[in-house]
Image 1 (cartoon, rainbow, N blue to C red):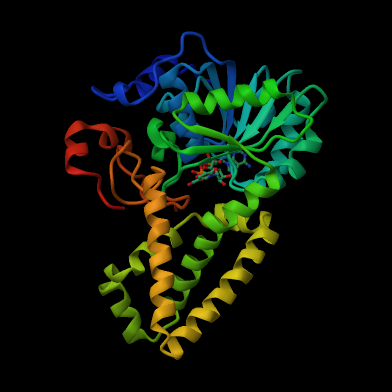
Image 2: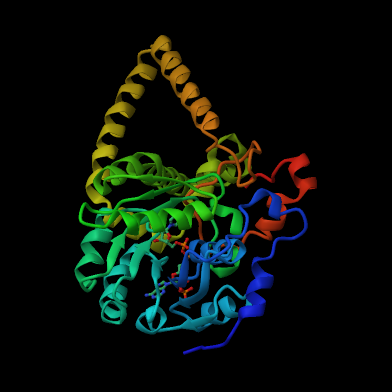
Length: 363
Ligand code: NAP
């Protein structure tokens, strides 16, 4: 168990380089939570730690990770005050616990930390499906502890504690899915945390969340995994050409299909029904499109492409199409990432005035 004080490093880690502070929210006068415990310090957990440090949202932060390497890195970067291997140790005395690990780990973590939670604590998470959180975590929480599941809809294709950056959540949406019996005050406090990180917050029924995310995120990943898989099964000669001419559209699928296998296995297995329903509809629409191509129905194709172009414009108008640079045009972020090289100083790149003028690098 690592237990090193990392206070001064923390302040340094979260401190924006010159010019950064303007784009973020001001540091809050008093922290929203005395003690914040983060279970998982990867892309999302470390970004939340950085944002919480930067904006003074938590008095102190404890963390938990599976591997010694991640625990050491989190301390070195000053993301947390103390780091533990055992979730029960990490959540002791915490006012808010946020699960930031793959969905498949939740039930076990909840069973281990449940008895150590203090009365009045709030448990939340960042997982990409929500009904399964209520199913897997809820039963392990003692009376007087409130579960407010959450999903910050923001990400990159990278992972691990070094891939995170405080501005990841800026301008994006966070969806909270508390059940009816959760006190409104608990939901409000979690909403305040994410607003403090620069997010807009929506409260939604968990089942509705899972349907919406199935079509906006989960099925697109299934399609990307499939098309890249199809390309790899082509004959040698064609397969070589696939890389050479990937700029024709294929490369965008490869970025999504580079997403972390564990995270995406867990998402698809934990949001099975909505994903299968959307895939069924997709297959029907695909069959219709195939038919239109076969029979030369140009008008059908043109009408569809007109409608889809309008959707893209709607996404841009909603401010959800660009990079993580506030108000900048360009490459779309996604909920995908792999254990590839961490993106270099996303934070300093993201907000450097020079960079803003040039525009962001495409992923
Ligand atoms: P990540 O970078 O791979 O980090 C996962 C973290 O969880 C690591 O610190 C890992 O520790 C830790 N962990 C794994 N198993 C654990 C266990 N049994 N006990 C304690 N810690 C454990 O993943 P991420 O991208 O941050 O994703 C985390 C969650 O965020 C997922 O539930 C995902 O659905 C959700 N999410 C992801 C995105 C995205 O774009 N990535 C966007 C929105 C929501 P080690 O490093 O020691 O293994």
